Every structure is written in structure tokens, then in C-alpha cells.
Image (cartoon, rainbow, N blue to C red; front, side, top):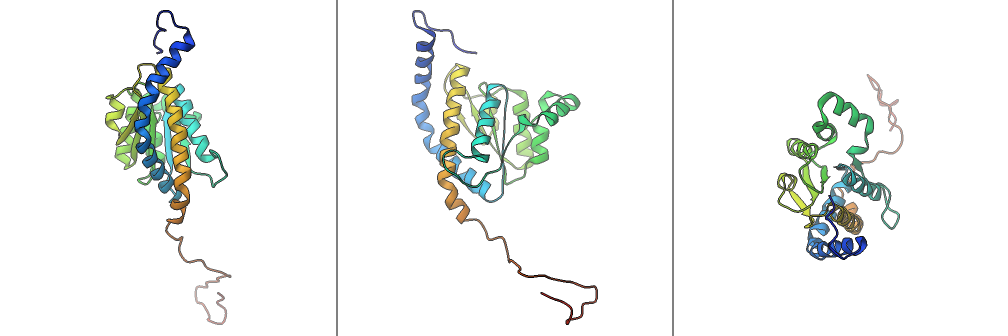
Length: 224
């Protein structure tokens, strides 16, 4: 819920005042976002995936992130695997109908998540039960779990391995600065990606030509 405008100020002036108050402390997240960007680049370059989820406006922010990674931020590069769990509408409604709304993300985490994957959960309040359940599922499945939240401490921030918490009581401001963090994170992913791709383990021997294998091969017939 947005904070009420201060007496005497316009809606825009008051909103920008609250935004500026929360924007300056965001500078302290620089090193965190840089480190996250490097980890996302290395995990995705090695074949891992980034799973993301949120509710309402946070769902839109999470989907913005996946669009930047699967598409591009600035310059052309290979697509990176990032999946917005809330965008799987048929799975979402089926799971909600059969197992309850709290399970809509957790069941997808258990289905898709692998130990080399990352889960990023976005929430202004940090109290959404379906995100908390997803964080528990990530721990059970061996995923590393991060959160973008509003003011900490909050239950989601406490459950995740690491979190970026925006210190503002205004949910609109929190979401707007989550978008700033999304863009900065993607910038760091792109910067780290060339080194991450170069560090990938080789894919193994490559065979050229045709190989024919018989049950009782005759050396004169077997071609390589």
C-alpha cells in the first residue's frame, strides 16, 4: 500500500520524495548485485537456470528480469535460461486448484529445480505464503535461494540465503527500486558472461564421420 501524500505536497512531489529517500541507501547494494551477477552468469553459462516468481506487481518485475536474460539487455549475446514460474498459467491454475494456492510456485520448484539452479523470489512485504513455501522447496531441492523484498527483517528475507531489501514502507517505491536492481543485476550478468563462457568445462570428445556398430562386427565392415 502506498503511503499517504504529505500535507501540502503534490502526489508526484511526495512520491519522488519517498523514492529519493529509498534510492540513496540502494547504493550499498552495489557489491551484492555485482556478486549475484557473476554467479548468475557462471551458473547459467554452465547449463543452470534461474527460476523467478512474484505476485502482482512483483510478478511483473520478475518477468521483466527473465525477458532481459532470455532476450538481451543492451547488446546481442546468447540467450540465458530464465523461467518466470507465475507465467505458467495452466500449471499455475492446475496446481492451485489441486493443491492450494500456497503450492503454486513450490511444486514448480520441485519439478524444475536442480542443485545448479537459482531461485529468485520478489515480494514487497516478504510475507506471501506461496513465496515462503517456494523458498522451503528450494532448500529441499538444493537450490540457492535469493530474495528481493521490502524492509527487512521479514520472513522471506530470513528464509533465503541472501536478500536485497529496499528500506521503504511504500510498496510502489519498493517495486520501482526492484526494477532498478533488476537492470543493474542484468548489467553485471552481461559483464561477467564472457569470462563465464570461457571457463566452461569442455563438452567432451567430438567424433567426426560415421560410426556403424554391428552385433558381431567384422573389422572390414566397421566404419569410423
